[in-house]
Length: 74
Image 1 (cartoon, rainbow, N blue to C red):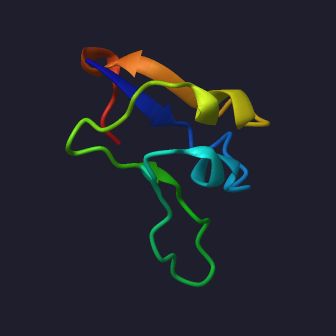
Image 2 (cartoon, rainbow, N blue to C red):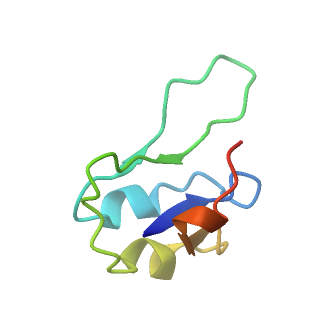
């Protein structure tokens, strides 16, 4: 199983991936004042088609498609 992984250090929160994702699988939770906004890829029902649009549109290469067993939990 493959999963999109967001590197929140490289991510500049431009939200291009949010706009291009046909399945609406990106989520930016409310962030307390003074903290850096975080972007998450949420796909509990395996709706991702692995189309790669989010990866292609990312200006900082902060998105990567990885095998599930190679994904680190933060």
